[in-house]
Image 1 (cartoon, rainbow, N blue to C red):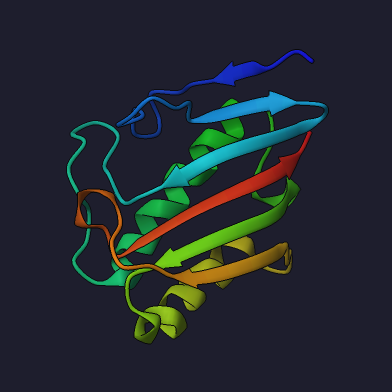
Image 2 (cartoon, rainbow, N blue to C red; image 1 turned 180 degrees about the vertical axis):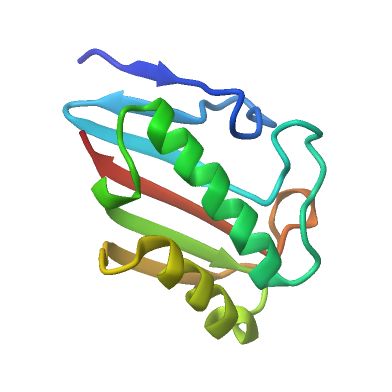
Length: 126
């Protein structure tokens, strides 16, 4: 099976041994995005909702680089360090996806990289 690595300067560079996304068998597997500004690699926003705005921008940039868009997303996972942030992050998520409603899981975690409050990954159809 051929794997095509996707990389873009419009989203934060990987901070570990992984790719921003990988194309395989007609799907685009996007790694989790946290609220890093791609130009400075600094965290954006203090609240989970503010951070989710940047996360969605980063995810959209990776999708475009891979030949997809938010409208092609079939599944997402949202990671939150505090489930009390669910409603505010859900509002940002809903605005970003509009009428498109991919399958989704939301998981509470103890910590996220760089002290982020939210991380989102996805799978999109190509």
